[in-house]
Length: 411
Image (cartoon, rainbow, N blue to C red; front, top):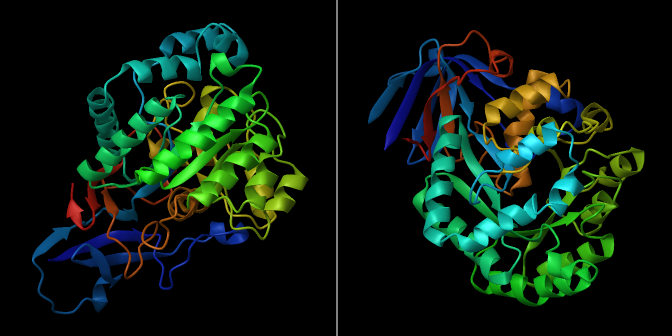
């Protein structure tokens, strides 16, 4: 099957030589081709270039993108979008000034979602999550990492991961599954959380690995959650079962989570509101992707991660949605693109790199996704008629996506 997208106003995020990630000042550079074509063969990008170079060729399908732009689909490397029920009442509590801890003590927060997930059937969780995936796809997302973490028992965590497995089979999107057994501390383990860590190590990780349900593991290493020592134990257990680590780190305080992520070669460390010179120094030269979650900082009215300082130091930065019912109830990556520019003062080029290639790296798929490059999977979207690529983050209140193609097929 040969597909031609022709008369593209501007083809965005093109690479002649594939990169796994973009770092530092290079994040301000964005390859584009104006008045371009894109050729797809059997779901893979075969060629691209200016229309003047196309020549006479035969195609099974042609799409005229005149007046429209083409981007690689977004990669969303941090979501919790398998859950049961919304938490808008807690949203009102936040407006009234209740703290995260106060809401949790009233049975809210992660414990609220855990109770609902434990009670929900696998079919219910799947149907709800599939609808969320469809919405994300309509806004231009083609790859997503989905974490468990709202189970908080071995049975419920595995149930969530089985739902993710079903989503992988049902959706054309690229999906990675992460076991986040250590997302919060159940009430019965308060004061003896090391026993819950034992449960994660002795039951959750081995069973998830044995059933092939997880691609990665994750730990919430932060003040009020899991300590550096807890985190190290769980990351070591994951490594023994072939699961590379990822870490929720430094959302609440300078927790040591970033340094732990680097020490254990975690694929990413995420949140990072509390990131100082020591944390930046630790990340430099590592293979760990710093990932910022603007939706959560916006929704919770938190401090912003020092993205400019991180990039100025030479670090890469990724931006993901953190789609979840408690602190970031949106999987709209176009909105994340806009937040990157408005709240973190990123240039549009930097923000596009942060939501495509760098998020692809943060979920371990940048060799296949995240840019328009020969040999990569043909995941891209065609915009509605827009004046410039800068319009994508500028017009934050509308959906600029007209058509989405995943593995070379319109979906």
